[in-house]
Amino acid sequence: MDEDDSNSEQHQSPELTKETFHVAGKDLQIYKAPKFDSGVSGTFLTGQSLWPSAKVLALYLTLIAETVKSACGVLELGSGPGLVGLTAARLAADTDGKVILTDHEERVLQITRMNIAANFPSQPDTPRCAHLSWGENVEEFRKQHGQFDLILGSDVVYKEDAIPQLFQTVGTLLSLNDSSSFLLAYDTRGGWLDEHVDRHSEQAGLEREDIALADIPACRQLLGSIEWDYPLNTNLRLIKFTKKGER
Ligand SMILES: C[S@@+](CC[C@H](N)C(=O)[O-])C[C@H]1O[C@@H](n2cnc3c(N)ncnc32)[C@H](O)[C@@H]1O
Image 1 (cartoon, rainbow, N blue to C red):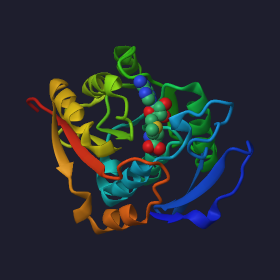
Image 2 (image 1 turned 180 degrees about the vertical axis):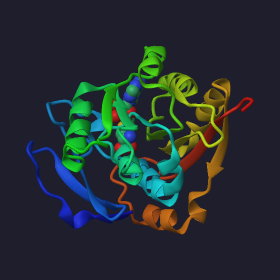
Image 3 (image 1 turned 60 degrees about the vertical axis):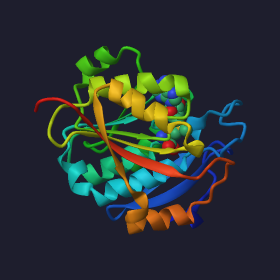
């Protein structure tokens, strides 16, 4: 996935800028609010911005494009602007609405929908967008949408008290096929989150495998080029979780 920073421009609301990525031979345009700005309608929401973990996870998806294509159902949790889910939708191209992007903030979902419309104008394979708050009505969501072979989350572990609900949601919605996985990328913020991630994922019946980003040249290069515009530790962790159990 190539990224073209020179293509930033103002769109509709003056607070939103556009960043263009290149996925599977096509542009992918992502509208987003600047970080720590007042936001689209007064109060800044983290999901209105695009975070470094999303760029890294989106790039990683392009490296495992065959897995994305063959997945029966792809779900993004805490999508924000939706770079990760929309990258998956680009890679999955020929499948009918199998990608669903979710968030719990309506003002965030407005930006997600804008990005879906900007990149998938009235195509039969348009990714879908839905409200999903971790740990709430997850059974109902499963009855409505089924389970997913691939669940994606970028920078969705930053509030300690939401981590159990996040993994409970993954435990309910991840299918038990051989190739099913939950890919999570997050800024470790100095490492204090790692223990919570490890413990709560185990409690939700998930096995984890850390993916060494530094060993993947394209990811290493991207990490080196990201401009970190917030004062946090800049160590990203990418984990592949699978469900424990008999298959
Ligand atoms: C830091 S932003 C990351 C946005 C995007 N994934 C990215 O990496 O650019 C965290 C996202 O998680 C969403 N979120 C936080 N808590 C949530 C919850 N309990 N249920 C659903 N979404 C949640 C927020 O609304 C926000 O969109």
